[in-house]
Amino acid sequence: MSKKIAFIGLGHMGGPMAANLVKAGHHVSGFDLAPAALDQARSGGIEVAESAAAAAADADVVITMLPAGRHVLDAYQGGNGLLAVAGTGTLFLECSTIAVEDARAAHEMASAAGHRSLDAPVSGGVGGAENGTLTFMAGGSAEDFAEAEPILAAMGARIVHCGGPGAGQAAKVCNNMILGVSMIAVSEAFVLGEKLGLSNQALFDVASAASGQCWALTTNCPVPGPVPASPANRGYQPGFAGALMAKDLGLAVRAFEAAGVQARLGSLTEQIYRTFAEGEGASQDFSGIINQIRANSQTKETV
Ligand code: NAD
Image 1: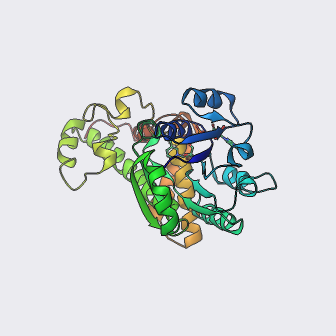
Image 2 (image 1 turned 30 degrees about the vertical axis):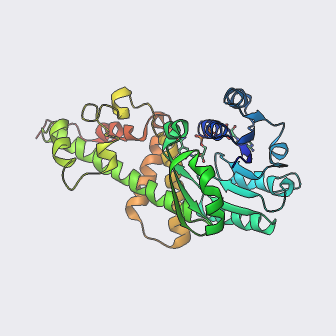
């Protein structure tokens, strides 16, 4: 059934996601602080509102796709905030990647204002947003999930209800920690193989069909050659930028601290990606970490 949807944050992800909602027959009123994002949104059939509040005022559903938790909480609260202007019982879908504790705070604020809400972060990147093939990881009640599912299905191929409030962000932060750690493991293995005189293709042929197999190796392979579509074959253009990996691992570290988890590899991976993202790695694909590992490795003849 066609809904009136307010979409706040029409950037790299939000713009194409909102356009897919229009294609699915929904009426989308959108807002972004950046004029360029608004121009792009218009070309995708989105009605541009004068403000976030104006977009949300008569919406059935309010979707946020903003940079970080503080942007979401700021947009939600205040006299002219999204929660105050939306009609009672509006369904809030918070799709940004934010800390689990911020997601839980957003749920509590929405509930206190008489609304329904899900945290529903995504994986799949800009390509997934454009093609409508994102994975959504949702946290909230079963009833709210059931109502949100057909809306999310217009933007994604896989919609998973992970549990109660914050469970979607919890799944996202755990998954991306696996991704960051495994990319470093794969990259260190390739650099070690190179030093031991092994060709990248030989290591790939063995590990991709053996117990070292993982997404970082077989889909996003950090060396050019074995997987033609991986970012390594196009100068490490993202893909998934180092800055975003550093951000997500920062959220993982916050979660370790809040939950009292000893995660030594996760913590070290966050430090490595934070340093990577302070330099040119910020805008490179996160698999470009292999070049830093190679550069930091001792210069010795092949042994
Ligand atoms: P982006 O920076 O391209 O888009 C964010 C947009 O929000 C910008 O256009 C900005 O102008 C706008 N904005 C900021 N504050 C605003 C406000 N108060 N009101 C209205 N608009 C506001 O970022 P993105 O790549 O689209 O990512 C959005 C979210 O999705 C982030 O939380 C990111 O971590 C997450 N994410 C990104 C990817 C990816 O590959 N880019 C993948 C998965 C998840």
